[in-house]
Amino acid sequence: MAALRASRFGRWMLWSPRLASTHDLVTQNFAKLPVGVVCVADVQFKGRGRSKNVWESPPGCLMFSFTSQMEDARKLPLMQYVVCLAMTEAIKELCCAKGLSELDVKIKWPNDLYLKGLKVGGILCTSSYQPKVYNICTGIGLNVDNEEPTTCLNAALKEMNANLPTLKREDILASFFNKFEVLFEIFTNEGFQALEEQYYNSWLHSGQKVVVQDGPEAQHADSVVTIQGLTPAGYLYAIGEDGKSYELHPDGNRVSAKEDGNLLHESNSAHPAAPPTALRSALLKITKQPQ
Image (tube, rainbow, N blue to C red; front, side, top):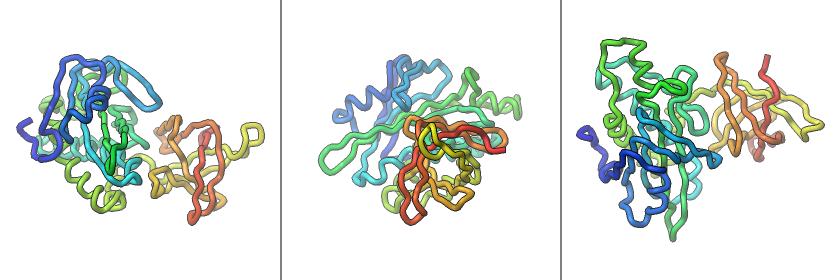
């Protein structure tokens, strides 16, 4: 990766043509590896995702996991947002540097990457604690060349101009670490608030409406809420038509962005949150799309 400028991340690399899981390898050997090491695989047959999902990643995907450390536990849930932001900006900057049409990759909360309404990537962050520091393993899967099952970056580039060159996985990897190192430094020293405006410029959800189911399953009442942004803890912050505030959690949920700009967010139960000065946790279930 000749284009790598980062000094802390991506300087040490483990590579395999076929590996069960880059994330498992890095997680299980964290203490033996230098912080900032990256593990890359061409094919992954037990890749890890949220909710313990496991899948096979075929050739054509950029699949890697890397390590970092953090002292402040309050920042851990926000790490995935920094990683998502770094990847979206890295792809755009790489396209610009190579004279290619810009790929407008967007963040679908909490940790997916979308292009033209289709998923092209996902992020997984896990952590463990040792005295005075948290060890973080971050896994990323990005569909660069494989058009199945949705689409890929290079297919989108070819649609815009078939005569231009395409992106290479190693260039994306270098561009990501160049960007991530800068954002991680800001995040560590100043907190996520310093990156929040950049993040909102890259996500799908500002102003989107959801229908939530308030109360027990048998006695629910539907409420329409509008996504405003993130809470300090990193959850979705929404306001209802009645002025009530809601905090939407991703735990075990599915978030589906719709072409008309609305969002569907599913889970098992729903409870209205308190006013903004005293937000309570709320798991929200979408029963129908706003009309």
